[in-house]
Length: 294
Ligand SMILES: C[S@@+](CC[C@H](N)C(=O)[O-])C[C@H]1O[C@@H](n2cnc3c(N)ncnc32)[C@H](O)[C@@H]1O
Image (spheres, rainbow, N blue to C red):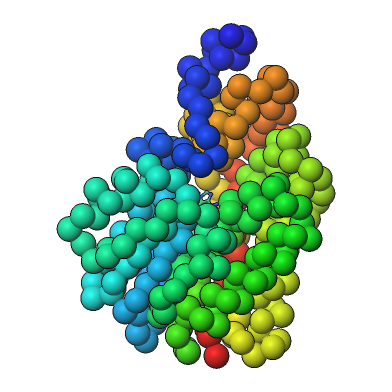
């Protein structure tokens, strides 16, 4: 056991990519993401309130149901299908929403699910999760092959599984935010796809390229917004390290030899965000893609 593991009890936790972070622990660690006074959930609620019609609805990467809860309350007459790679996340939402308008649960990889859908939806949405799927494809198959897979999957989904006038909503993290810059430095140690951290991630770049192309070809209409988040406040260094290592980095580094280097690097990076009272304030950001099928 390393000195760090003895010092930080939370480093004993580990989970696989497929399981993801346990749902209750996810809920416990997640801090509110606020953009000019509105959370990501407030912004999504307002988006839903302005939709004309959304009866058949699909959520990709639904996680513990944080966003689903907003959809259920805002669209009480819709039929919702939830999807996630993690079976334990789906089990959790099945229990959480057993008396609701959630009608189906699909376990699997989001990009693959999008390529195999057979229903037609009025709305498909995904917040903070789709990049996980894209990057898993990148790590397995490389950038060029993933681009083809993603393009085919999204194009097929828009053409066959979104009704005319239907909507697609995607929230993607901004890897140039203070928070993500610290995290990208760590992912870069283990994933060659993140070798250039001076720019947006492969996932963001591919989604941009494909959606802009579909827009130019009149398949969709695309609006993309960049939101700069209010800095997130961490009570102290230990709290921050637990959230960074076990939530953002998904415990990936907890058993690796480079763990002490990762911890030292995060400690070093966060010095500039330390407040006089010992708390830390670290900036966030995201991109919101709002798509309409033509
Ligand atoms: C950061 S959480 C976001 C959850 C939820 N959308 C929210 O905003 O609270 C990422 C989610 O993506 C899921 N995930 C990871 N890889 C995935 C993949 N390849 N396909 C689908 N979901 C995936 C995880 O299990 C997790 O539930």
